[in-house]
Image 1: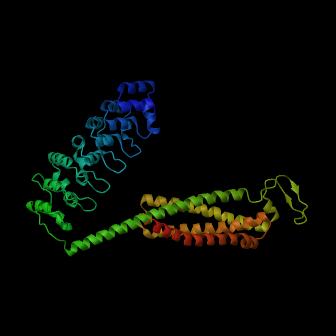
Image 2: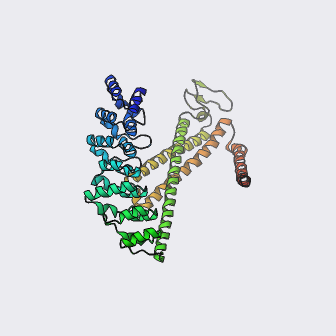
Image 3: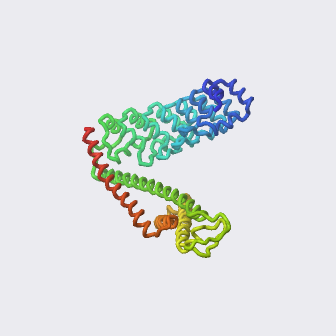
Amino acid sequence: MDPRLFNAAFTGDVNVLLGLIQEDPLILHTVTVTTSNTPLHVAALLGHAEFAMVAMQNHPGLADELNQQGFSPIHLASAKGHWEIVRGTLVSRPDLAFIKDEDGKNPLHTAATKGRSQVLREVFSIESAQELTPKGENVFHVAVKHNQFKALETLIQLACENQVLDELVNAKDEDGNTLLHLACAAKNSKIVKLLVSVQTTVEVNAVNSEGSNEPGEIQEVLRSAGAQVSGSRDQAVVINQRQQALAGEDQSLTLRNEKYSGSLRNGIGVLAVLFSTISFQLGINPPGGSWEDWASTTNHNFPNVTHTPAKSIIWELQKRESLTFFKLNAVCFFSSLSILVVLAYTEFLNHSGSCALNKNRQVYWSFLLFELFGALLVSAAIEFVLGMALVTDTNVAYISSNICAGAWFEIVVFSVLAFLVLPFCSFVHGRLSR
């Protein structure tokens, strides 16, 4: 960002902004590709309303930009409580009431998180209040989870005016929690009293379906509102909670497995690209190089051998061995290409939702992928040994016994030492840290 533009946004100097726009009409357009925080982000964060409105008038698209933290300008203004900027922004762009930040929250959710009551009055609408976060929470859930009592009071008043109070206060998030569940879990008696007040029609008995153990003060509040408060949890509730805990563990394990599977597929894709590149180069430029001129050799080991420029030397002198080498190289090359095709195809199926409908198909494509990858690794290993035999004027048996066997021996020794030494070092470190 031009330092003059940043300083103007920082100080809210509209005259400097207009001068810069007159000097370069595209200055606000180019800034979106050169920086994370645009001048509108800076003005929204610091509360420079006039500057923000002038910037929006000259480039309305600035309001749609998310900074590196995933916030739009109206999210920043909502979080800081700059209601004048929020109002002016919505006058120019009413659709910005529904813009989502990186966490999937709209400006109303952001204002509720920080307890900005005046901003809530500017942003509130039936549609924005009904929008849910990725966790299935409406704006009331957000206010209760962040213990924003004043914000909740404002929201109840606004919902009453729009006749959507019953729907919003009794809504459940993705875990089945109502507002009363959340308030009781947080032991926030002040919010519980507000929720069971005469203004609302909250379902007071919903909290007891989970068998919650509330403090005495909260139990008295619930009893006075007509709730049937139980002092202990019955067996069915305990079983239900255990099942929910196990389901959560299974979901966490599934997510970890999916993340590991994705990383493994990415690694295979990178190796496939690497092997395809190397195989292509070996196919065009084989080991030993190519003849540089027209000639015929008189070497007694290869009598009557003629050659032409750019032709492979090992192909002319050791045709049978080089033929095997080229076959293995072709296996490597086409295996790599096949792996890339399978990866691309399965990614397409995943994004289109086809694979999600058929787990057997996923297993089939995974098996095919690993089978191709195994063929690639085996052919690459054999090709490596054969290539060394061609360029060293030895045979495969010699390379295998004198070079490859030694390499494998060193790998095994190193692995065994690491297996023995690392636990010992960990044990010593644990003893010393006590």
